[in-house]
Length: 127
Image 1: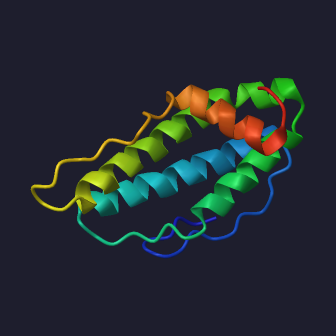
Image 2: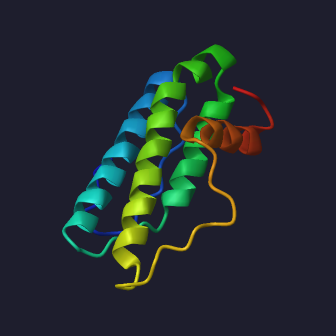
């Protein structure tokens, strides 16, 4: 799968084994890294399909046996951190000049807790 330069994120195929899922996570991390680079340059970013790709990865991880799924936790935590960094970067970039950042009513949970909650929500299982 190629990394789009400034287009919607393509629909992924559902990876079926741990190694394929690990590669898909790496590919998604590269897409997010590219988006961060474009954001740094002030270029527009099209993240259409990102949510679908994340759901596909969650479903693939949920289909694994628990030991194989646990082995992917460090990569998933890293992916969550990259997404959080992109979100913060886009919030700062898109904030009107002179307008203070408005805090959310509740701060988000740390990345590992958010990753575990996303997995729980998608699968009904614990990591």
